[in-house]
Length: 283
Picture 1: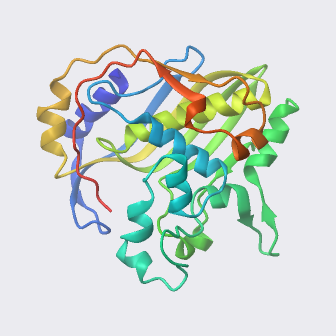
Picture 2: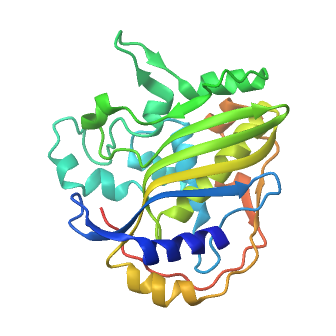
């Protein structure tokens, strides 16, 4: 919580106003922020100065792991996070590559599970790194990347959280996640939960202990219509202790994550929070 609140204050104190081309709104913007999460101690970085809806973050992560490309599939898992970008993004609606309602195109998990090579073959990045880590192998390239410039035109949105690098030291697994752009008041806690849960899950199915998750953000920003709520409401609240995340220990393989795991297999224990804050969302 201290890291999160310090970042918010740093953006307010040091950020510069930049107009975002996609949304047409101004953003108070800071370049470079580094966060870390103690996954080993199961200290879930769930925001307590406002109510945070962690289930949607886990559901979206499961959709990425499964390589989903349709907002309807994400809704079935328990999240509506892709409804707007797949159905309300004007550029995507006009894109001839869009297949119809709820189509997201080749974004996020599609790239992670079905990266296309110039020869027309597919690379399953996630299966490769899981296979290596299960055998105790770290080739310094255990990387899951969603960022494919050659196919930006085939999807509704470039990935914000775009690359996850896993590192194995002895029997402890670490994760470094890179994010090019972050809506701090609204989106950051979503991303924090996903980084934390991703390390927990991959460590569990590869037979390792989770260590620390490192989260690097390049462009951290606050939209102009969010600033007053953040500064005058959320930052004046005292945080509560962090909760923990319990994951069904029967989840042992990538196949489990692909086929039968649901939100019922995750529980947050000891979560206390202040009331929710309705921050505006920019499509």
